[in-house]
Amino acid sequence: MSLVPSLDPSFAEIDTCQIVALQGAPSAVIQTLLADIAARLTKRGLRVVGVVENSNDGPNPCKSMGLRSLHDDRVFSISQNLGPGSQACNLHPEGLALACAAVQDSIAHGADVAILSKFGKQEAIGGGLIDAFGAAIAAGVPIITSVSPAMMNEWRQFAGEFAECVTADKAQQDSWLERWPHHA
Image (cartoon, rainbow, N blue to C red; front, top):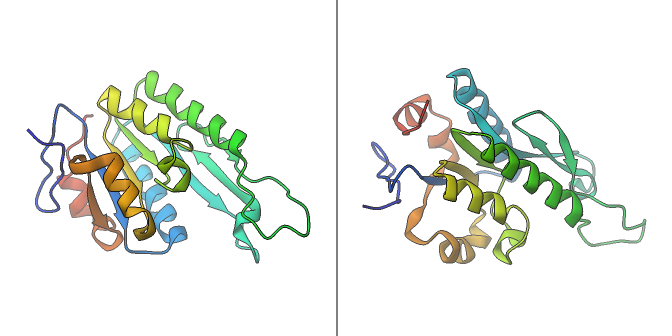
């Protein structure tokens, strides 16, 4: 049996865990789509946990990033002020660790679906939300996330054959979500 979800018409599964990574749109569009999917699944009565990225649309969105909890709407700041001369992204590891711990706690208290904002550079090196991914997998909770094309090699090393990428266009369709197996 395989954990690899097929794009059409349904997903194969191993035990109860599936992983879907959305691609094919800018990050802000993907994050909005993840929040929309969470709302649609919640409306169906599913317990949806996880985090989606919120960023300020200023000249440098990296300066004011946060992760919003889908469980209780808390926002975890994942930015830190590096001063006016900084040219680097200002990712705040402590905020990211707090968000990850909150997701892990939500999963431990019961979840039907985990939505994790992305598998990115931090996750590729064993940080970021990687422990939340692990908690969901261990609990048999299906995961919906995103991954940029730049991180595909690392994503494949992490997820291997246990995940499938779905285009943002396809994920916006209610028919895709209707066919996706879940546990109410």
